[in-house]
Image 1 (cartoon, rainbow, N blue to C red):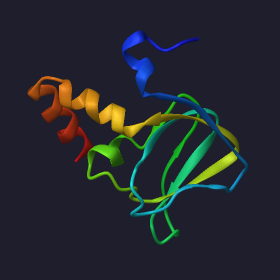
Image 2: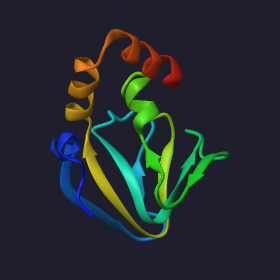
Image 3: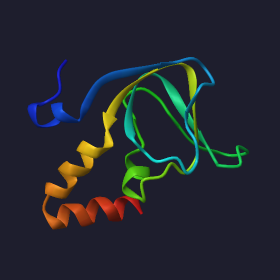
Image 4: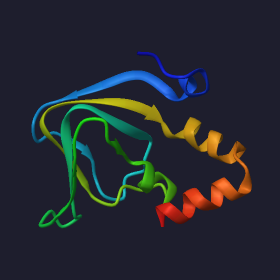
Length: 113
């Protein structure tokens, strides 16, 4: 299945294939990509590593909120089981947001806060 024409530009046409336990992101790293979980999952731990913040599986998006709320990852992301992530370029997502009406931009940023 291909992306709608207006979304094709944000796809890096790249997939990350990860093994269980591989690190996807670390706290305070810049969010360079947003991910769609295709198979497997991603568990996000608190920066201390002692508490689970989220566990997301197939068809869930990871990183959009972090991107909108300052652009830094807020936790430790680990692959849960064999995982495939589709990679979306944050620069292009942000360009699309900047082109959106002001009301839409405010809503997205309020939802991310």
